[in-house]
Amino acid sequence: MEFKILNGVKTYAPTSKQELIEYAFNKKNMLIAVNAEKILHSSKEIKNLINENIGYPDGYGAVLILRKKGNKNAIKVPGCELWLQIIESYYKTKSFYLIGAEQHVVDSTVKKLKEDFKGVNICNYRNGYIKTEQEKQDLIKDIKEHKPDVVFIAMGSPRQEQFMKSLQKEYKTVYQGLGGSFDVYTG
Ligand code: UDP
Image 1 (cartoon, rainbow, N blue to C red):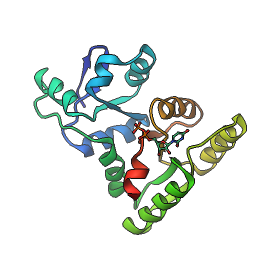
Image 2: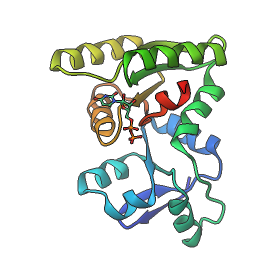
Image 3: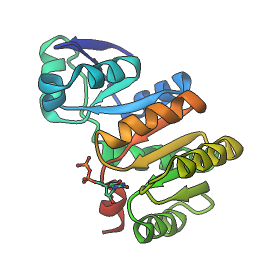
Image 4: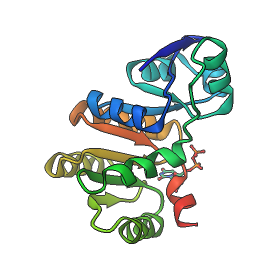
């Protein structure tokens, strides 16, 4: 998949959601939303994180810049649609681990996913309020035991990106940060 470096931010130019998803499964890396704000104002730390992973154009501004720079068929991929597309495309063959939001929200998210995608393999889930090092270590152990194909983390930025980075060191797979998407999905 092609990419451009936009103000120091490596931004991929997918021509379909499927192309982006397959690329992520091949690389077993983090999917990180890039928008004009991130291209213009990201800290060095966030730029480095995006550049080591898969930054995709989640905003129209980012797509316009990519198109202007020659990727005429680049499409916008909203993060809130991408995670559901990943589940829709792979719920029969891959497993998912959910982390984030308040307990009742993540409970409802899992319930709704099971209704919307019959037989979906959600290997485990927990809320996004991880307060102690022990809780974090327990979570890492649990993820390693369950070996999910994808870990979705809805804790808001930049908390979720920092958290994904530390999990990725312990267990390499596809990660996607989702912001408030569990809240949106459950309405
Ligand atoms: N959240 C969390 N852990 C925290 C703080 C917030 O899981 O320590 C959750 C919160 O419940 C909400 C989401 O993270 O579901 C934050 O969404 P927000 O819309 O603020 O994130 P953004 O989309 O702006 O990055």
